[in-house]
Length: 175
Image (cartoon, rainbow, N blue to C red; front, side, top):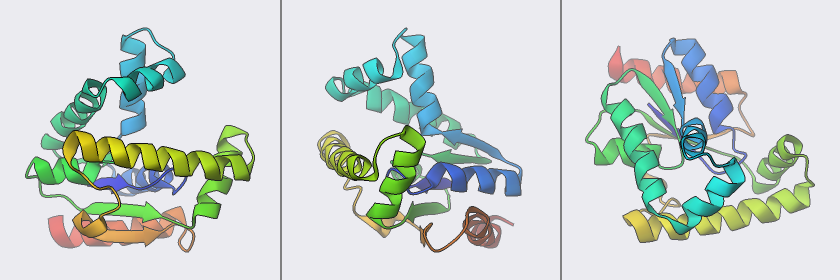
């Protein structure tokens, strides 16, 4: 299974609730990225700046996620998780979680200790940069939601409700 979405949309929370509900492993792309930074002896901000200038970091991250996804019985949470599953020819339930930009900014501001206005601007910039980077590196348009089986709004549904809807689709496909 894959869970993707823009910053602040609730992908990690949704994936955590889903993993607990289904009793399967969750592999958050952010944790893999942090592990890669630690392996190189870099702080997260340092590694983020490094990764922006070195496309091989994205390739390595996605390769690690693909390796784990091929073994099955896992939820992969990352921006490109659905495309990884598709490119690997894996049978997966692909989920995109989103909500209004203002709500996403509020969540990020709360998590990061910034203002909602600053978070809104930073989210927009991050999304622009990532969209350009993934188009250039892989030819993937992250704004194209046609790769997803489900598109859910975390502003309308609680994490438990999101997990329930996803689990229903997963069970219909895999049970």
